[in-house]
Amino acid sequence: MSLTTLFLVRHGETDWNVEGRIQGHLDVPLNALGLSQAKALGHRLRTMTFDAVYSSDLIRALATAQPGFDDPDSRIARNPRLRERHLGVLQGLTGDEAMARQPAAWKVFKSREPEAALEGGESLGVFSDRILDFLAEALARHEGKRVLCVTHGGALDAAYRHATGMAQDAKRDFPIYNASVNTLLCDGNRWTIDRWGDVSHLPAELTLDDT
Image (cartoon, rainbow, N blue to C red; front, side, top):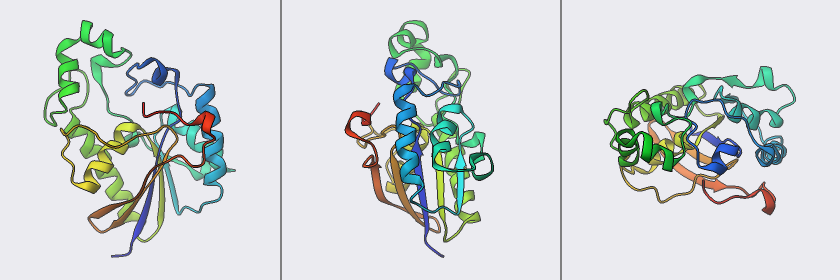
């Protein structure tokens, strides 16, 4: 097997990130800071080479990817399988609102039990399988190449856990930064983390805590 390099990028900041509001499949745009993050990320991406470029079709991911390419419409393959987890009845709510209005669904969400059904949305296990199946197919299609995927925090979480053998229900102890570049090396079915949470391309004023 040839070594394939996978670059995973989380979208830039949205107003709902700031508010702690659950986005899921809702199509929330980048805010002003997020657009600045995307521009800074774009400068970095233009110094790199990729054999394939994929993005979630949600606007917050697509707008993060577009500044990196002169011809984004033809260069970036949009794919809904790279979307964030569908969070059903929790979408559009803050954590406090979810606890008050949808306590059963909130309990499922916070439990991280892979097989627990989430009303109106995806279980964590189904979501993780969707992301990992897409990435495995892309890696097989571009074996030995350099693949960029611009996606969402949940997708980065699934990839990190897969690469490190971390259980899906374990408490997260790694960062997932907006507009970060996260690099994995893939040799057949074996994934390893090369570099994680890299925001060196962002000026200090655009670098945020993990949200």
